[in-house]
Length: 476
Image (cartoon, rainbow, N blue to C red; front, side, top):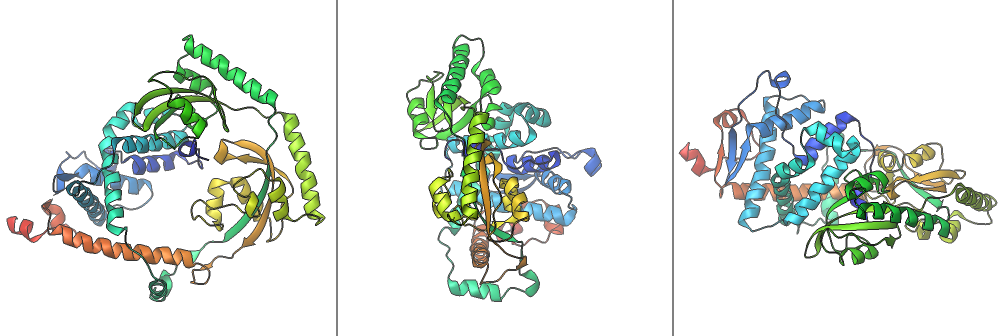
């Protein structure tokens, strides 16, 4: 689905995990407190590459994150953290030299996605603001440059390794050279298929949804409600409603055609007529536009499925299930003929794993995306299927239906091998080769950049790379 894939709610996290996640995603600098380090230290510059600096607080914040994750933090930890920052700053500095650019629109879009994701997990924008003690606008303003520099570093890293390839011989050599105790242990994996029926949405259901949205739209035009309040109260897009319907910055082609066709006819702050897409009915407001990039918000009302329609779908899937049981119809034939899941109906109902882009699922992965599936697979043996059950598609804004699930195959936990886990081993070999290219690049660039590190770190830390070049060493 193309319209709201950035705004889908993923697996729920505990508040502790949200704390860790938010630091990692936003790079938010939280002042180390007295309970952690015994005293408040005045911030200072501890390293510099070109005009890029690393602060003592940067290291303290990263160590705080590690402590919150249950890991120990000591002097060697600080050294490792500093070296990671040195690598990132070297990438950013080189990106500037090479005129590598990340448009502000892309940074804004990335920022919107990260903030919306964290707000989804915490529960609301208000809780997010309460947690950080500042408004979303201030969070965005404060961390815009930090996000931009991380994106610059990532882009520079991709440029360095973009031509790295791996051969079959190198993959085999990589695997054979692995120490036995370093061969990864592979969790149980499954291949699953499903046949899905969604209840029919009647014209009456559509008319009711459109009528509801027309009333909401008129209230906004009459200034009985602000657009933000109306979206928060009525919108069925759970990802954007907590932001008052705000979809952040997007680029032409991100949204479905009907949505964009209406949006690009609007002037800034203008509100559209009702727009119908495959997701329901929208009222759109254009906030700002820069060429093909646009910032908008919307209110979505989806037709509501009646109980009678759900019963009808359940009755229909029962008959399909019985036909498969009687072997008058195969599962693959049934999915092709009847399934409403367009992504799987023509491949026997097999469900693609978005993490790996193949049909093999680690049990942990499938639990994070489809907990219902995880529970059903636990009780199945390969070749068997469940009886029809209710289905809530969390990836399509909790769309309700009914389905039958079939377990096609299941592997036992095992040590990785070239025969059964070639893709995993190939990726590990490729990553190793990329790291070797990066190591060589770092060594070359260190000698060509101004680098300064505070004496307490140069004397105590054993770095992987020789960060102090001869010119700086001589000046010290």
